[in-house]
Image 1 (cartoon, one colour):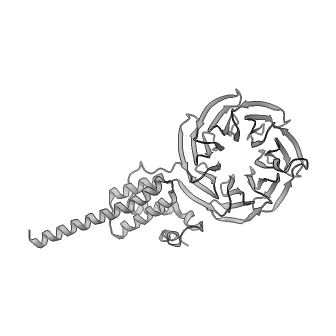
Image 2 (tube, one colour):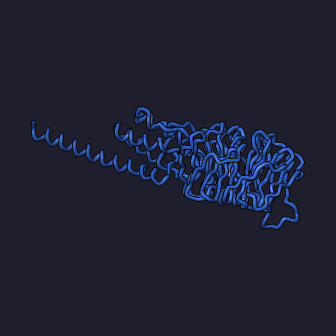
Image 3 (cartoon, one colour):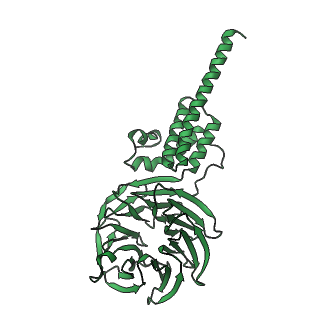
Length: 412
């Protein structure tokens, strides 16, 4: 072998080593972003690395496998950004096509499922703490710090009804923390800081019944069979009333302040979210605790999926956790940058929405591709851009450079 040939081989080896070093540095960046729970940023960086590999003509199976692992662990799908203050509550319409968010900025915002703002914000005169869609999806209810519950047409934003608090209620006690429609959408229940649950007629705005709780009420929920209303609050008990005649059926001693309650779809069990860092799963018939799920700080909200086999819980510990009801296992854990105030399942079960700080985040469940055969570089690039489509298309906070990294896959 000639000296020239040896030199050429040596130079090629050095070039390959430099290339591997560059790729290693590039891949470390999305891996670090994933570790600090910045999943969308990790996805965008992964796309940039994949495009670099494509540019230099390197398939790099080992590198592609590492990138696939990053992408498979990234369950964040979109961020809905537009509120100027903390988002307190979030709701997804029954058909999964719309999302509503309630904020301290005195507005309710509507979004398409793709994350695009829909209509103008719906305005209150004080911080909005509660929001929920009706069961047919045609109406939207929101409750605020002034004790007012508004009923809106969810399609066009028209105000249909306004329920005012009784005049004898002190201003500091007027806050409405949660609202819940009855299954037939004819009545709505509100959880109030004046120590009551109020039941309103949706059509004419009449106050049908006031249920006394004994202390501030933080949560309320109708069972989907229409037979029961559950509420919880500062008196540390879950109360269950008969929906028809409003008689008290059960008192479940929770042990600490309750921030959220939710019936399972079949109304056989009830979940309570508490200041004691737990979620308790109650058997409604026996009034016994079936399971207890744990967080590292207060739990603010709970939501069952459509068939009742999964439960999502939102906590001050900056996480949303997904639990299996049949076996009690933790299925997923989604980290946030701040306390999580609300969480809700989409009726399609593959998506949940959570509220933290000024943002609503959308997460995908059961999207793990790490156990399948390693995708090719180009397959993985397209897959990642498909995931990022709604975020890149509709979020106005993304840099111009990042916003266009997947343009080759999108028809704009």
